[in-house]
Amino acid sequence: MTADIITFILVVGIGSTIALDLWGFFTAKIGWMPGTHWPSVGRWLLGIPAGRLVLDGNDTRLHTGAEAATGWIFHYLIGLAYAVMFPLFWGAGFVAAPTVFPFILIGVVISTLAGLIILMPGMGGGLFARKLPNAGGMIAYVLVAHIVFALAQYLLALAVA
Image (cartoon, rainbow, N blue to C red):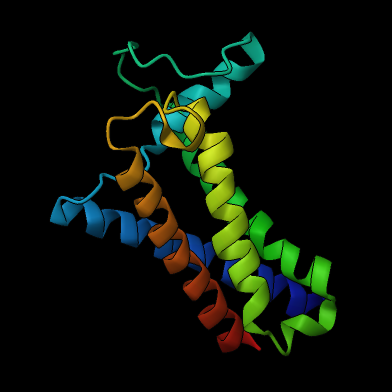
């Protein structure tokens, strides 16, 4: 059972994060939204211990390799953390028989709120993107991206069940 849980977490966590990244690349390609710039997230994260809780939008320095690595690793660790929540909250049996509701709750609701309440303000966009000129469009983008994320979580969970 432990191997099944680990497989579930790795496949669902990494696979759904890859799906989210592919969605971001697609939306950037068609000109809707550019997706999250993970090196900037890395810069933000690395600045937190120094007391910089909000990314300085005026910082035009090139991103370092450490910032890029930090951002991308953080991104995939969060995807894995969401995958851990399924067997943690719904039990080990969930891995063998996943149901839709937990993926809507975690993959859509919680991950969307985390993006809009934690990541967006940290990146300088304000709570629910209120500081951005296209706040409504950004909220729609984040919601649709996390629907794609949740759908990938569910389909991957079914594939490994």
